[in-house]
Image 1 (cartoon, rainbow, N blue to C red):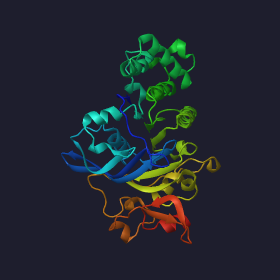
Image 2: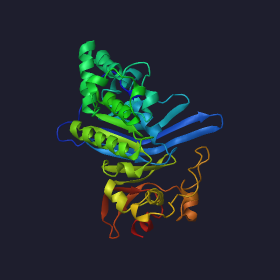
Image 3: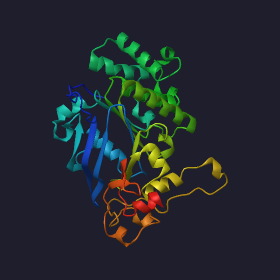
Image 4: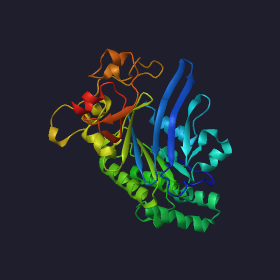
Amino acid sequence: MTIIEEAAPVPAPRDGEDAPLLEVRDLHVEFATREGVVRAVNGVNYNVHAGETLAVLGESGSGKSVTAQAIMGILDMPPARIPQGEILFRGQDMLKMSTEERRKIRGRRIAMIFQDALSSLNPVLSVGYQIGELFRVHQGLSKKEARAKSIELMDRVKIPAAAARVNDYPHQFSGGMRQRIMIAMALALEPDMIIADEPTTALDVTVQAQVMDLLAELQREYQMGLILITHDLGVVADVADKIAVMYAGRIVETAPVRELYKRPAHPYTRGLLDSIPRLDQKGQELYAIKGLPPNLLHVPTGCAFNPRCPKAQDICRTEVPVLVPVTEQDGTDLVGRGSACHFWKETIHG
């Protein structure tokens, strides 16, 4: 489903300020379970500016989607709890807002696209009705006006013969077309930011590329901030401006997209890159990171990645590495780069 709710005025940055649209500071999220407390997010920090795309990468269970749900305010609380952190949207901490204030930001200012379009759309209502409902409810348009807006949006996201298909039902569309409908619903109220959670899951490679190109085109046109959550490095290469790599609830590396591809500064990121199939390695066995992501009830001491890491040493098993700036060998700062690895120098310069 797409999270859309009523609009609320939000102060914009003062002239001359390059303030981010969204800034997440030291965010922690935990879940109470019968077996114990699951610490799903542990001190996440990132920001997104207008017109910028941040890709958040990592395997399933790394905390990507939980962070996004915390931003949207759609976690079930309990069992979820946010013991500390800040989520600043245009300088205002959404965690300190009332439920009503938070609800008014959701949708008009920040919208979210979920990965399973078929289960997110109502199967007994036409797609035109579902898109048009946003305009009828939030902008007071008539049914005729809302239908016209629905067709316009379907055209905008490149659904062929939109006027003829506006009365079709979700099951009558392909997976890629359904995902375009979800994008149209997210764009309906022209939000400042969209969070896309695995928007290309279960789509074939060609359709994945089309959906990602569409998102990038719309993001540039509307100058939205875009957070793209994915486990696939190949999907974001030509779309993202910067990347945050997550593992076991922490960000382990940050970098501009091309810098990360050229010189990863964390063994986990290098493992993800090495796992991407390459045309020049036809017939060779695909690389896979050994082992599995940790059970968040029992995260390994020290660096959570140490049981799977080829560079792990004693310090990795006892001390949690913090995210530190990454530099060239001569000490020159690499802008926007950080790594939470005791041996990042050997990884990036080795």
